[in-house]
Figure 1 (spheres, rainbow, N blue to C red):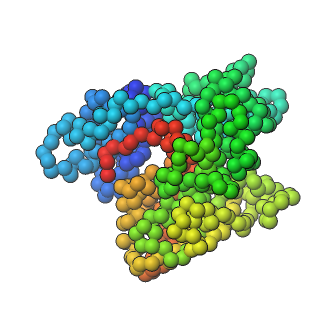
Figure 2: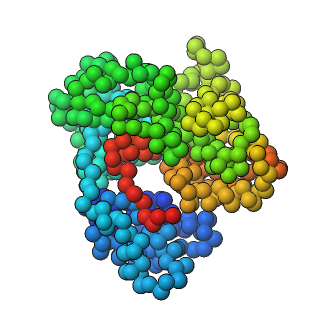
Figure 3: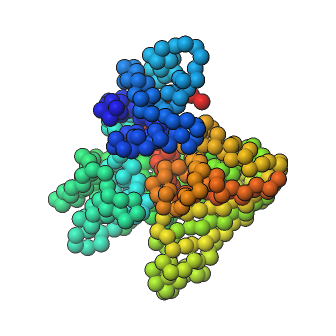
Length: 459
């Protein structure tokens, strides 16, 4: 299967998945484990014996760029009563992708402004998704030079990560040209402390999307400095935007993005985690009122040891304390879901873990429900709704935070922890506040760049 998966990806920009989980660049064991996951959601085993003949037929087709879920195709084929052969069934289900075979995306240059936690994860994701080269191309990283050996240190931080593990592939450094070569991707490292002073066209970069993950500028005026630079066309902010900036949670309000929008905010990791399940609850049961409490891993904004900090409590040692702090996620959620305006409050507790956070949604619904009904609905949402890339679902009595490191979903519903009492419910929602959030940022980038390809089969 692995050579066929690679051929589809490299030559046709076709990403192959099993229940929304990508099989591209995965090992034999990872592919087998991805198939085994299906038992948790379909109450039935799915084997590579089932998906292999489906994949064989997919490879034969002249497809355009798309995402093909061979897991769902295999499960649905078993249930299909039309008596079709596998060849006929696959061709019918992917007819749309065949008709769109001549639609090819134009390559989009991407610049990362800042190379911290989110910046380096975005770099990994962009390199991973380079594919045929007709999609997103990471061309440059902009940072402030820290002194001798800066380039080697930047490359080393990309190569090794204490939370997310080693980089999957090879990394080399071109000192003379100030560049990092990651899996053959040539990435310029540009040193600058002024967002308005870089001429990106000198590096062959044009009409690029710049992702500002420094958080230093959050309004239109500050971020607009990037647009003054030759070669930059649009800007994405990886933090809550201020003023009239659109705060986008992909999967929920990304339809608000217009071609004329030159600056877009991807909101915060917590906002991305809570808004999809809140939307799902509101769509089905209605939300009367609610409180959001986030148990959040510590971040670079806190001190390692007690020291001065301009914010209350955040000056206390992050690895030693639980720290009560404020969060704007509840207010930001109402911006993404205007129907919840005035209905939510929120607070946050920073805890001594380096990654993966937990949102506790304490909600009063407008309709009565039961534990089974609520969990069954959320399970369906995670598998078949338009929110399936944002919401994951797990039912395991032994799940803990480290189990969700590397989750590509904005949030994961912990079904075993759900509490329901009539109109009152409490949801426990896990989220990788680094990786899952970065995937949401990438989805916005894919949308505005025209490389968010259709998914098959259609639910």
